[in-house]
Length: 461
Ligand code: NAD
Ligand code: UGA
Image 1 (tube, helix red, strand yellow):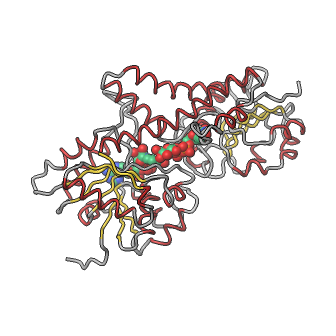
Image 2 (image 1 turned 90 degrees about the vertical axis):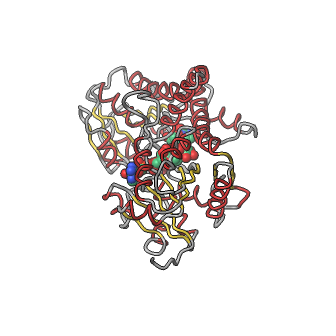
Image 3 (image 1 turned 120 degrees about the horizontal axis):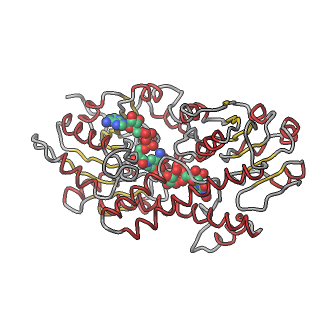
């Protein structure tokens, strides 16, 4: 047997947006722990082993470089990494089901179940299995049944440790989390697993911020946290529609209500709508669960958070069309930002996808620019028919355009020379600021017609 120079061996199955950064931080903060991240996607693993990481996340490369080859390893040998693990995190994708029972709402657990069966096949010793993926409440129950049906006499203890990081700030969130949540069974073995996980995180997280609970509470807390966050955005976006009718200003309203400490200031930024791989998927999952338990009023309540988000992005495009004299056919429109938020190249469920599709349906000529997300944008729009261009340089994207639509709040868009941009555009020139990012008064004074979200539009006609 190989000499163990590490106190613990941690393996993570799934080297994605969560598995990669989370494990890099665990490795950097726990030098006595060997961390191996595995994935069936060989190209992804190769990228994790290079300096051209598969995801863009500020500060990630530094952390990876600090630990890679010392106590952080990436591999496609899933079975070997399962065998050597004491603690096994599972961070595979759990998308919305697209077929069969629960299609369009329920979580598709096929990747999870495949992983569980793989764990049974490859394991030779007892292990703690940690749900890192976001899962329907009570998944751990099903997992324990699959895992502990093994004929090898191996015991698997399933714990839930949902991840709360947000993309674009993942490293900051992981280094200084608001809380770490660890859910386990309250049996002897469950409490032992709880202690192991608490000790792991206590390498760098204050114990007061490490919360423990039963497994079901941990699983449900993750879905509930995302639902509450998305609900805040839908709430402020619903108010933005009323602001546009009444000359109230959504930023002023958001500021005023956010000053109430019971409400709080965060997540009240009105926008073209929320995107990202999880809010919609996790709320749909919650809705499906409620329906399954016969709680249809609860299901409707949460479903409306998504409906409001769809309304917001639809409203944004409708406002564009109506402002541009009800026709945008053949008009060049520059989309500033395609990522679902700033500081990431991720475009999953990005509102920009919907905006682009709608503009193409109207036969507009769409030019997309984004500092990090053009490669993903090309994949997202591969099936779309119509005139689409992808352009790194926002000045070139805007040249000859009738309008700019800001869909991602990249800081660099604030620093552009808009006088130069205005001169290069068709007149009258329009800016639709889906992120309320720019200085609207200044742009108007320059000569732009400006359409923010939830604020009075500033027009020269
Ligand atoms: P992702 O798609 O980026 O990564 C998942 C990885 O798992 C992929 O690389 C895939 O190849 C791999 N995989 C799938 N099946 C596998 C198998 N059988 N063996 C080995 N590897 C396998 O997904 P993600 O964004 O990292 O999300 C993972 C989970 O974390 C989801 O449940 C998500 O809801 C949750 N989550 C995501 C975020 C986020 O910001 N993206 C934040 C919190 C929680
Ligand atoms: C979100 C949660 O914030 C994380 O806690 C959670 O772990 C994660 O989902 C997940 O489970 O995947 P993320 O989607 O990466 O993180 O990013 P957010 O900062 O939450 O932004 C989501 C979307 O809401 C973005 O499109 C963003 O632009 C939008 N948003 C956010 C607003 O429109 N207004 C706001 O005030 C805040």
